[in-house]
Amino acid sequence: MTDVEIPLGKKSLLYRSFEMLPALLSYGLIMLPIILSLINPLIAAIFIIGFLIMFFVKAVGIAYRTIQGYNSLEQAQKIDWFQRLQDLESPDLALQKWQTANTGREWNARQHSENLQRIVQNSKDYFKPSESYNAVIIATYNESREVLEPTLEALFASNYNMNQLILILAYEERGPQSTKDLAVELAEKFGKQCYFAAAVMHPNNLPGEVRGKGGNITFAGRYLEELLKKRAIDPDKVLVTTLDSDNRPHAQYLSYAMYAYIVDNRRERRAYQPIALFLNNIWDVPAPMRVLATGNSFWTIINSMRPHMLRNFAAHSQGMSSLLKTNFWSTRTIVEDGHQYWRSYFVFDGDYEVTPVYVPIYQDAVLAETYKKTMKAQFVQLRRWAYGASDIAYVASLGLRKDRKMSAWNFWPRFLRLIDSHVSWASAPIIITFGAWAPLIINSDANRSIIAHELPQIASQLQFIAMVGLFITIFLTFKMLPPRPARYKRRRNLVMLAQWLIMPLVSIGYGATAALNSQTRLLFGRYLDKFDVTVKAVKK
Image (tube, rainbow, N blue to C red):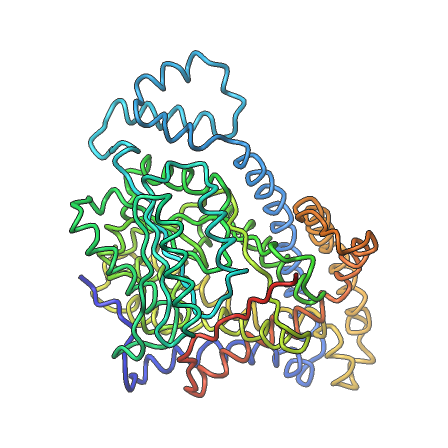
């Protein structure tokens, strides 16, 4: 099997070159309008117009995917996934009932019928839902009862047979004693309602580990491995879901994810990704955090409709047999979720995909005790996400080897999209906002160029048309918002609408800046080797 661990110690010159690549590309792209303006304003204008047209095309596609993804999310939540899961218990009888009943109007009804037919015709890789288990690992570090207990309450309110649920509360030795006491107490309390529950402590300072979530959930995964051996449970029949302490799964998630897992005859080479919606406390957080949380929510909705872009993110599920082959998650990176995609991709020689699960996992937007701390915590969270740029060197080191198992057509599109996503994250907001003014400001000769004079107006018109996608997002946001808390008056709705005026500032001040910060660290070898836990305060 391919060694998929991130290298420790001094790295090769080639590896370091690819670590430096995203920063060099991002800064180079940001500087390009300036450099071209100095050389030839006309060339600079052509480049900027081309960039804006590309942005416009992407914006149209994003608007379409937003509507499509939202509709899928709405329809999927109306389905009784527990009943569909039970249909797999006796697929032949369920198929007869399904064909005679008027169920064709249900979302994905045809696919369910085809799944039943395939299982009836070939049950070689099939097992019954009653033989399966959902194992849920919840990582916690210093979260309060007000954060962690509602997550467990949401989990146990699921439309699922709790006798087939395994719960592991994974806490850190380096965390406070109060977290340990809370984890032990909650494991005992909720363990009475499910097949098995335990609080598992991740020891501090294990060799070869960064201080991050990956080490915690991997330690819990190995505990789960031993539990399954002791109880003679087949790992192929266990689906493992990782949650953060503030992740509240939709009531249908466990049934839907297990259904998707059972009907997938290539389940070992799949991950199952719910829709992350950062809406738990959306009414309480400051305006910049609301804009970012809403934007991140819709980004997960959009990516669910783009299988070629879908990656493991935050809460996700993967079969236990698959995790055993990948040796669980990486303990050497602070971005273990996105990295798990590439880790699995190379373990399975390029035959690995992420399957969307169109029901939400509700998460908290960033909120600390004070406004200043909240602003800082938000930047730290985005910087950690943007540190996924470290995967570029990792992917290059394995994907460019002569003995790689996957084809060039399989590898290169993925690799180039990875680079493009991080470079665009860091550079696009800046170029879109300021690029059109570069020729006029930098080169006095541009004053004699008609196209240079018209460029800001052209850019403004393209941006205005592209804002159709923003209007769609605002409209759908209000449909998705949880009920307004009684402590807020109706004028809070106007504030929630007006907040979108600061989106350009937020996209640069947080999005581009956080991405450039992470890429600059990689450029100079100043690695992030500690997982900065996002503050999760609760407004009472």
